[in-house]
Amino acid sequence: MLEKKTLTNQLRQIGYKFRAFGRTEIKELRRILEPGELIIQCVYGYYQGGSGLLVATDRRVLLIDKRPFYLYVENHTYETVTQIDFASRMMQGVLYFQAGFKRLIFKSISDARLAKLCSYVQEKIETVEKPVAIHRLISNASTKPYLNPAWRPHHITSMRRPRPSKFFSSTNL
Image 1 (cartoon, rainbow, N blue to C red):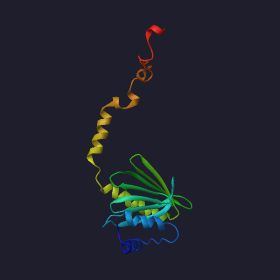
Image 2: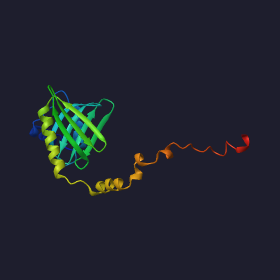
Image 3: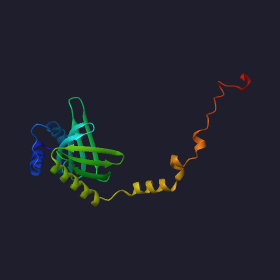
Image 4: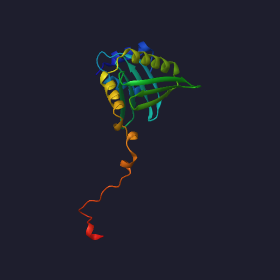
């Protein structure tokens, strides 16, 4: 657990002032961060499941949503992030974030912070090496087309299942 003084100093350094929104998420962030982990950027906004705090640290990206009866936390390391894009709209910024099969659309009024967060994560993705094991799995799946259901013959999927012999006998016909 991170000390309260250390967390407030980190948030002041990035210029984040939590007044009304995000106070409960900041309290949970204190419990989630590891010792020595630095907060690079922090933005409060809305996503498909509700509202929460999107935090980029030097090690990972966190989405924290704290409500009265539950806590929702997404933890993505930079190795798992596949794509991140930023779009500026009229009154808000939109961040499109994808890590594996998980896709997140995060909207915030503070679009300048969201743009900084996006550029930092993009920079981090380019410098971090992707694990070799994932590349091997992808290359193995592409060399074995029978693993893909689209390549299977159609008559296999449309064949009728045989009835169990326990309930059906040829003498009943």
